[in-house]
Picture (tube, rainbow, N blue to C red):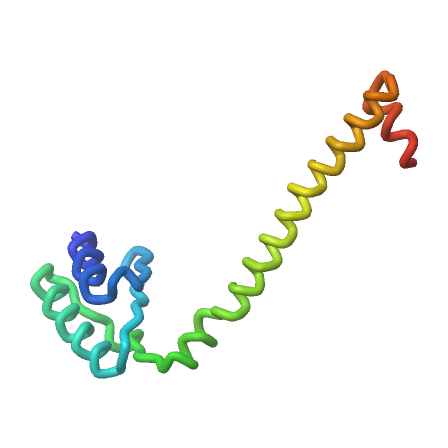
Amino acid sequence: MLFDIDDYLLGKTDGDFVRWMDDIDFASNSKAEARKILRDLEILLNSMGLRLNTGKTKILSPEEAMESFCINENRKANDMKNHIDSYKIYGNFIKNTILYGFRLKSVESEDQILSYFR
C-alpha cells in the first residue's frame, strides 16, 4: 500500500525523499511546490483510507532542513570515515610492503618481523 506513496513521491521529487514506515521526508524546490505535493499526497492517502497527520507535518526552509537533518554533521562524519578508510588501505599496503621486504631478507615469521617494531 505505501509503495504507491513511494511511487508518487519518486515522480514528484525526483527521488529526493525518505520514508520509514509511515514517516516521510521529502525535498521540493519551493514551499508552494511542497504544499501542492502535500495536498496531492493527502488525496492519495485518503483514497487508501489513511490520513496525513497535520500535527506532525512541517515545511522547512533549506536552512531549517540542513539543521534538522544534520546535513553538515553527516557530511563531516562521512568525510572522517572515508579518511579513516583510506588509512586502512594505505596501512595494509605499508604493512604488506614491509613484510615483503623482510621476507626478502629471509626472516622466518611475521612475529619475528613485528618484533623489530616492539
